Figure: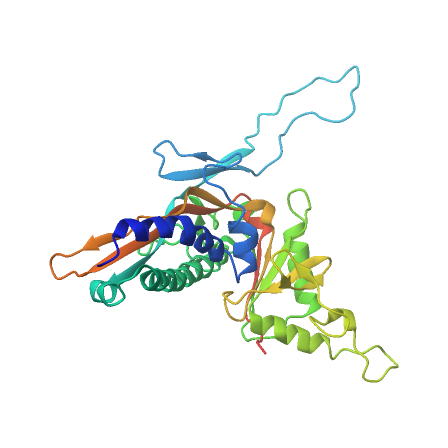
Length: 338
């Protein structure tokens, strides 16, 4: 006798979904640090738009023009009238992945354990695709004009000078442009390039530094190869062991077990989904994955009409990647890979 869908549904919700949801944030340090901590409806100072279809991040982009400083008895106080706040509007996005099990397979694998195993394998494979879609889009060049596929705003767009992000044209407002360093041909990632990006993302706002540097795996490996060849003047064949990602001195790890370098005390990690030939200096204080609905399942549904002959399930969630200070984010492109 075939397994009732109600039993498969119960097992999916009780045993599979908690594990699957946690697996979404594995592998990528960015998913682990920025996406994983987000909670449904916990939006900080951000608020839904009037029609509820987007979320608005408040932005402070100027200083109040007024009398300020030490008080003197002959001082005439003047109140600030300069507009210092606005908002960036980010539409909600849906991310999903569908799973199908043909009814032939359901019948051929009749029995609780076998069909449970099949469902688990299918769901795990689906989560890998969902994870890939999320983090790939995070690094992408998608801005407000991306409507064909409904992708989130991407970091390359946030760091650009000519995109429209959150309803604000970066070409019209310098304070809404991130930092970009590129070249006509690929080059090694050097200390000078990193330091320029560090300075140009740190100097604005409150002067807080980037919190993580994410690179493609090839870029970080090349960075290690180049740096470990540097020797102290007057010595022979002795490099700087503190620059190695691994070795006899052990490894440095950040939350989630990700191995890292450290540039000016900022963890520098590889992300398998990072854009090739690229590095990103990110300040997580100003980046948020706002969750409208946590990832959930539609439940297993039987399809037996108009040529359909399977049971299906969809894992889906609604959210938006938002930025409240594009100037605090940096993008370095045209880098050599090992």
